Image 1 (tube, rainbow, N blue to C red):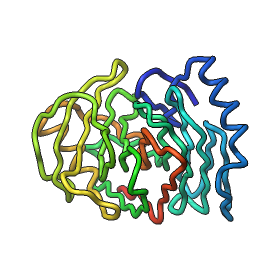
Image 2 (image 1 turned 90 degrees about the horizontal axis):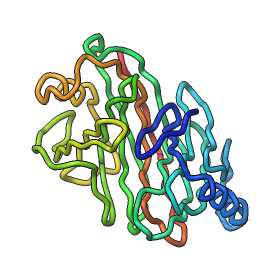
Image 3 (image 1 turned 45 degrees about the horizontal axis):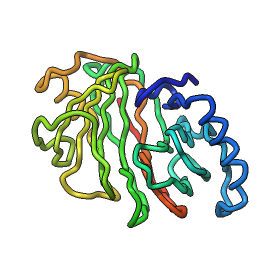
Length: 244
């Protein structure tokens, strides 16, 4: 798995952490494992880069932000998993625990790409439940924020509001120094539902003209966690990605 600066996520969507900060984070995680809740799960880990493959999906703990605190991931399957995360209220995304499925097909060769989700989330902290979708070259990042809590915001500037894929979105366009970022913020707040991802991709190609006939790469789903002071639980109760 490769590590890159800023928000660029490759296979595991891991970010670069400056070496001293990484060492401090590793030490912090080791010291606080005993404080994290225990889960009777098939798999679990407190390693910041922990990953686990199941049913064609891969789960990632993905604790990458500067000043990040401890986080433990557990899973019974790709569709039933969660994290306990204790992130300080210091601003900036600390982690993106997620479940990922690779598609690997040009969008104009796809007839359908849909995904369903059901989550349980805390009422406090600062985070968003979000899809993070990439083309195969990792040049274009498409984020679909289903719900958000606390003072978090997208990269870039507001462009328009549009109904796509079953939701009404406020659309932002930006650049993070490594790749284009197109953020779709749900004007409501959803903890369960189905998203027509291909509708979003084809709008980006044919209406916004921001992308071409790119190959759809990783479809990821999880939480960008900015703060969860004291430790908070985030859980996926259902998740799937289907395409043809």
